[in-house]
Amino acid sequence: MGLTVEDLLEIEQANQISLICGAKGLKNEIKGVTIIEAPDIVHFITGGELLLTGLYAFQSCSISEYKKYIYELHKKKVSGIILKPGRVVEDAEIKIAWLKKFAEENSIPLMEMPFEMSFQIILSTVMERLFNEEVTQLKYYKTTHDNFMALSFSDKGTGHRIEDILNMLEKLIGNPVALFQQNMHCYACSGDTPHEFQFSHKVRKYNPGILTNYEYLVQQGQQTQYIVQLDLNVGTKMYLVITEVTSEFNPMNCIAVENAIVSLQYEFARDFAVSELEKKFQNDILYSILHGKNMPMEELQKNTALIGMDLDSSYRVIVFGTTSDIWRKRNINERIFYLNILEEAVRHWIPECKIHRETDRIVAVRKENPDAAQSECRQDLRKKLERIQAAVLQQHRNLHVKAGGGKLVKGLTNLPETYHEANDAYMFVDIAGDAVGDVVGENKAQMVLFSDLGIFKLLCQIEDPDALMEYVPESLQKLFDYKKPQRDDLIVTLKTYLDHNQNLSKTAQDLFVHYKTAAYRMEKIAKITGIDFDNANEILAVRIGLVVYQMIGNYRKNSENE
Image (tube, rainbow, N blue to C red):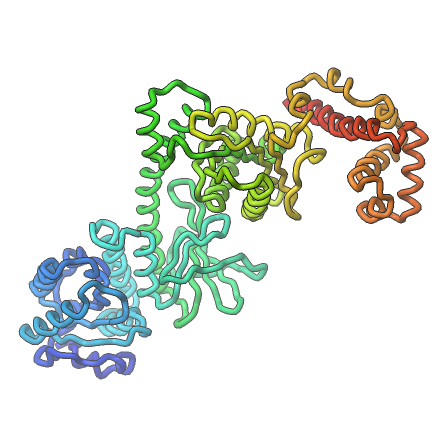
């Protein structure tokens, strides 16, 4: 006879396992070993296996369904069952009590292992005694493959398949795992504690010791982390991160990881198909509303209710995009990739908004409190924009975010008004550059609310550079026509001087020059232009002229690149 259950209990690696009942079956021969993480695994069992389970596979089963599964396992003449308690399972005490009675009556040894002990220790121990190294890896591959496939195709589970897959993987390898999006947000993880992850400068390639289609990386920190980059079959990049906490990562773990990845790809493909249908449905509805398409009131109420909006609430439209240089230099696939990054960041940091996607921008329809002060809304939007910018920069260091916001309107039928305003504000950021708007955070994202544009609401409708030059004061034109090398320094100094309310000390500090240098430059500017800095009307005209000049430069730059 080969390896028996009694033999297993005498092995050092299994000394923490204790027999609960079913001692009459200790001489049962172990012909294989597998984990039960989904009820449907019963269809993959060939007979004589030692079963490992935490009963989590049966956590949502009724008692009658549970008994049916156990009877099916008995038909396969399993050699024994090892329980790992600890997970929350519905009616666990009733199920365990019935299993004890069943095991005793049918001479099936029922054993218990500590929660902190890894299933893989038992899997490896049994397989090493039954098979040679190559066959052990093949058997382990089949065991993990069968469990992940049974989980993927089962109609049981928590309803969160990605978390179920990660939880199963943690049980197999004995270490916590997490899945991170390309912006490093934790998408899902095993257990209940969110994980954090950033690439270290010490990250290096890792040889998993098996044939693989994926690149493995490893980095050392407070704990060792193993990283697998997943280019999922839905055009999404993610990172599977294994943190070495309780046991050493090894090639057998990599076999489990490979099978987990297959299941993840399947789940993401399925979720992506459903998600894309939902997004398209929402996009079509929002397109009709934002562009003022006529729709019967009954149909409007029905459609907006389906996407979680109501007719009478107050909404603001915010248009997000990235610096135009990125779009000019990238091909269509890269543009889509970076727009995906922006959309992902907006969805993450403004989860309450409804997203309408356009060719080169993301339109967010956000429900807001009509009683909130404008300053509160602006401050909240600044914080959101700063976080969105930080998330985007993780993927491209030159990808700067800009946003334009419309006014708050009451009722969905008034969305076209705030949408057009948001688009005008957004376009004005693009036209006027950093000469206007609210520069947000150290990463210099830009934001403009249409209500703050003032006279520029009129100027942004003029696209002829020669016509715009009429709004540049004659005194300022003299500075622009100054052909000597220091002209650009003088223009920057003038703008900074006016931004600091003609405070020369602050101007010098901001420009990182000596006070006397700033004073000399201002004297030079006054001599060239003849500007009367004590005349408030002239200073206002000069301020407007500086913005208009920036607009003219950007119009000409855009024309050259088209």
